[in-house]
Length: 317
Image (cartoon, rainbow, N blue to C red; front, side):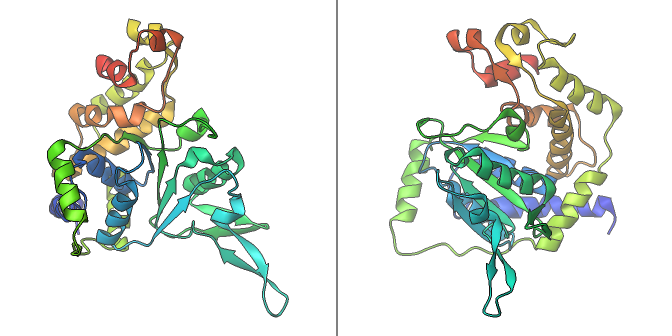
């Protein structure tokens, strides 16, 4: 199949995916859209929201409609790296055999990742980056596709280990979950307090997902779109010549080159979701906030003036 036909076919599949997911997930359209874009780019997501906003249900639903295996890991202060990646155990013949941990699935929900110590966080983030793990000198490849959605509770900070900047950078998108509207919450309550449960159809296979991830990499990009993405990331750095006044005033640390890469990858996927054969500047702007929000850090002046990261990003678009 040619790339043009693949893009035309994918546009219909993407619409079907969102329609099927909406049977189980009420509202949260932007969250669903951005999560799917991240998955088809081969990236990972960081979800930031209070408990009870259907984060687990979202990942479980996506894994069902995409025919992927799913594991949920509840991160706690006593969780060890071997608890998630696996360990070697003695079998009945007194030989060491590898017992895989919950990491060996296509979709992982790392619930409240900031509640576990840095050592365990690092084990997860290494797997995210390398798509493989090493135990007792032996390397094991994780299943493909491999997608991690980690969650953070933005309210409780006691007993948490905030993700360092270098580890935050491993996530393609950070997505803020908001409370549902009154009508959406009414629909959620009606649908979840009865005996019937919606059955979901499988829309895409693992092989099709991997094909789309490869297709995204092959999409051509015009030079002006590359330049716009790189300049946008550069503008977030206070010491850069492109940096506007609001960045110099409120930002202490800007986004690195991985932000530019993800702006282009995300724009490519956004474009083919719309049936376009190449992304434009508007596609870069559409995913600027989820790509940049966790990669730029406010200073004390921004906190004092109550200026949000979203406002700062919108002001430089």
